[in-house]
Each structure stands twice: as structure tokens, then as C-alpha cells.
Length: 127
Image (cartoon, rainbow, N blue to C red; front, top):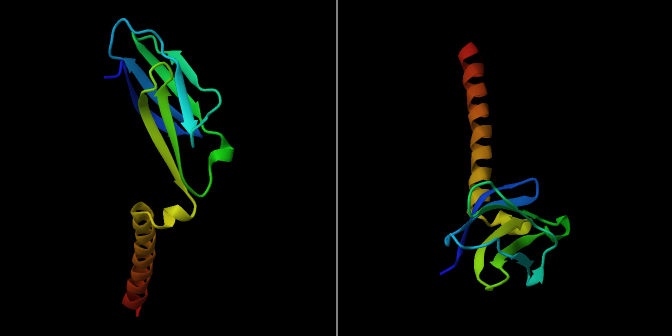
């Protein structure tokens, strides 16, 4: 069992943010690492939150790593090698097959049809 729990708070402006909590009260600030395709990512920011045994983690995502397909990032404890969390960014052609993209497209088409139908109803009621 891990001495730490990591939960995502948000992904905003190219920075993944999470809250790291120690499950053991005697734990000290861990050494955290992030990899992409088994290569270490650059600097990350781990700061105390003011709450005991809790840290705010910020992982800037290098723009050169964002591209077509799925890009997965692994967050782990360097001391134990244990994976704490991971996140994936999907972009480009891979998104076209994603059901969420299909639903968004259907919603846009439905909105277009609703506007056309309302316009048709207004035009036919005036005659």
C-alpha cells in the first residue's frame, strides 16, 4: 500500500494539477517523478498546502509532447517506484473515433436542425 494518495484537481492552461496526501502521518515530502513514453518530464512543482501531510502538485505539459493520438503521462514516487496516478491527453485523428466527439458533433447538428426548423415554422406561419 502506498504512503501517498494523489487526486487530480484540474487540467488548466497546459498544467495538470493535483493534491498529494500522505496516508502515514510520519511521512515526509516525497520525491515525485513524471514520465512520458518512459522519458522523464522536466520540472514539476510540489508545494506544501498549509494542511498537515498535504502538497499541491503542478505538472506543466511541454507543448512539444502534444500531438495526434493519445499521450499518457505517469506520475510516480521516485523512492518506491510506485505509480500514484496517470493522465492521458487525446488529440488529432484519434479523437474522431471517440464517442464524446461523436456526441458533440450530433449536438451541433441537432442545434443546426432546430434553428432551421424554427425558421421554417416562422416562415410558414406568416403566409
